[in-house]
Length: 75
Image (cartoon, rainbow, N blue to C red; front, side, top):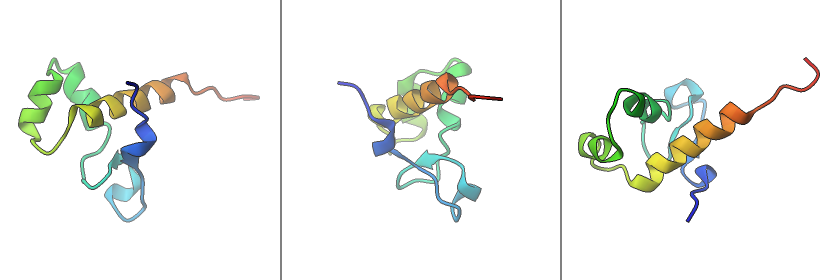
């Protein structure tokens, strides 16, 4: 079942200077792809951050995918 990142990610100016983060946490979305790029598995991340779920990790990746597909029109 696909994960909708909008269910898991928020950005508010009063927390982490508005950087996207996982709802209910101070964990920035950028941390997750960074850990994965460094060779860690989802399981490794969940061991490091026991409150995170696989669904939240998938939401971070879906968010990153959507950002990568973004196109500026008329630039």
